[in-house]
Image 1 (cartoon, one colour):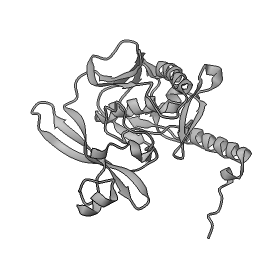
Image 2 (spheres, helix red, strand yellow; image 1 turned 90 degrees about the horizontal axis):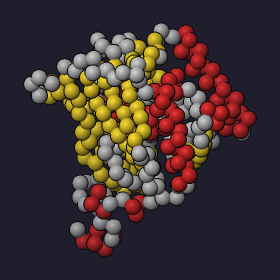
Image 3 (cartoon, one colour; image 1 turned 45 degrees about the vertical axis):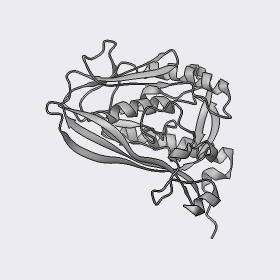
Length: 291
């Protein structure tokens, strides 16, 4: 039996109506809910650094218009200014879209690269996922509680200057696909975000060091050819480490990647392509049969 079409799939007008409905529903939920959203900013950094990180803004992506990379850089500059210095007090929730606001052309946002349904596109405010990814990475390296997260489900590009485990990013789309975390600790934390040359940089800070530090490790990272295509596979663990003794208190699986490869499989490094039985994949069928 054929799948019944959703209302939003009957054309652009129906899509816009559905989108407005979802955005209104999110606003109503926020107004009637019990969450307290962070809104206070402080220019002076809090004294203790929890985690810092920088990511490259302009990456070489095959088939992507370089102008979209320039637009992304401008979009990140505007959005980072809205986040920089934000204080999240104990019990408060950070919301990406309540902090950044709607990225419109009138506010100066430009066309950047977008990803929707595993497809690349362009749109005003494109590229802001990189800011959400940065914030999420800082939060993962802390005791803060992630309350809303939408994983990218596919491997869209080959690795190029990647410095964090694969899959630890998040999708955002105004305003019903949000990224949120809550401060369940006993002290305020602060987000600092800025652009430096071709990098987006950020820090998570607090008043005093937390009793534990955190480390993310990716294991069993490889590509595999399955019946329906190529996949990127790995597991990401979060280690909770006692700051005083250095002892690992907890090892938690936070992500089990099974992501379809959407780029040209010829770009997969041969040494990273394995059979699911653990052997090395051999692209030559004659040599493969001889193993």
